[in-house]
Length: 229
Image 1: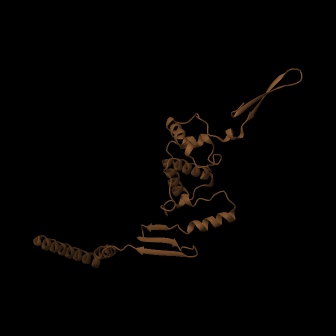
Image 2: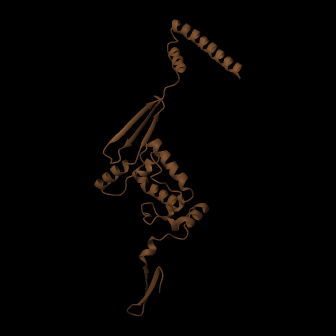
């Protein structure tokens, strides 16, 4: 008899029949047709895309088919929520216990054709791209160094107004850093300086006269341009 289950009937001594259930090993790791306890949307999405899951999809690490089917409702929103939560609570580091969930979400996005391309995405998705795998520490270090070759980081400090970036040489044996400070126009800098010293009486009067002169100058420039047109 073919199929996932084969029943062999053996006749024991005394004419008592016993049934032994033999399970096909392959069937134990195949996705079930339906799983209870999930929404209709998640079940429909799971049945539609499960055949396109990656060949190396780790169902055990993902928490089982039940967990994967629940994530199938909206894997993109689940992944964004996980990334945002990690940025708020752990400074951008994903908890090791959530590693299987991340892999499951990426596999679901891959099956829908909505995955990411590491050659096109640079910097913003490093949290996902650089997640450590289940390999020995020595191999992880090699993979980490290799991943940094084509990975750039870009930051902007709101308080200081400085753009900073980090990139790596093609061979990965050097690091390039850059920083650019955003400077406002001159009249804004003067205005901020005067406001800083406005508590003293002398600078308070100076601030008043400079502000009046600036407003008059702007009015003259506007009128002169209007006359030309």
